[in-house]
Length: 388
Image 1 (tube, rainbow, N blue to C red):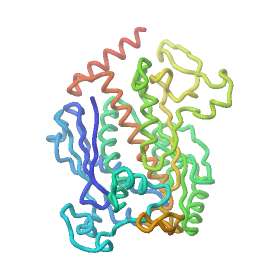
Image 2 (image 1 turned 120 degrees about the vertical axis):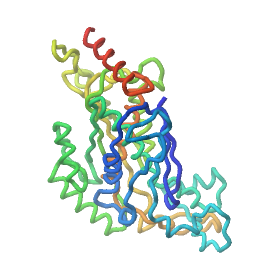
Image 3 (image 1 turned 135 degrees about the vertical axis):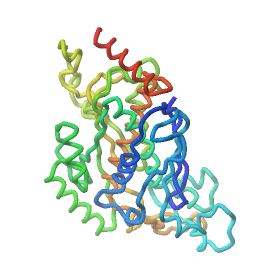
Image 4 (image 1 turned 45 degrees about the vertical axis):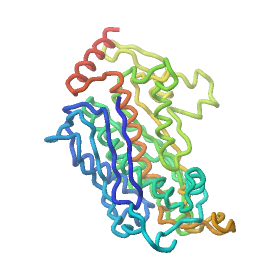
């Protein structure tokens, strides 16, 4: 079973991730792994933190001479900003005032501050915000980047694009995946629609000037996936459901749709379901892909198409009203350094959480302890499907 855990705080010394269940003999490209971390840091609208950090993952376990060994893979992403927080975030007890500790007692609306403080009985809400910060997604991208290389070994590609930032919607581009990757990688807001790109940048500038924040909608596409990942037999084995959970687990994400998603609720069945076709060379396929590559919780061989909606970041430079947990008096919420728009970066994060879930389902289907064993299982299955 493929799984991972992450640990670390936004202003702590590092983020740590441990992957268990990755098979042996997978060749890892370390430059490619770190390229994905750099992608997460880009995007118009990011704040000053991205000027401080230059993320790179150090592999400190589970890999030898460029290949996985089958043992747990340990990844470390250092926080360069730690040098300014060594006293405040030290694990040892410290003497000093609340100011010395940078104690947080004014929860921010829309954040985990108050809920976490109540749940874990913290009088310093920094204990909550340090872990609930989106900085943790750097570790998830590192984990997903390993999964992404596993998928690439079997010819599976992952791409993403931004479809909306605030009031500005981009036209969804039906492009070959390699071309979509190239175009969005050159865009500061990760869109393939140049007209929308300029409008999005102007909109972000406006929002930032007003001291506000903005969200949006991002899309992830996975191509080359075989039929039959996931299962219809139990609720927690449906791959589309697991992907939806993973997407909504991303910081500030509030919804997920697959294929045409919520639009299906306003259409007739004849406008929603994908007709089945067959050819000698291509086998069974779908004439369209309105269901986003899934039927019955299983992949059907078409592209996986997933969209997620990100709410505006809750840290505002014109703060909303809140209540001091000490005095119970009304104040404007405490401000922590943040972005005005993180939608382009969130698109990268979503690519990697989706890649992880697909890789996990792939290993469940074609399980083995080494890449060679999985390759043999995969070939046998493809031959079985071809003979069907």
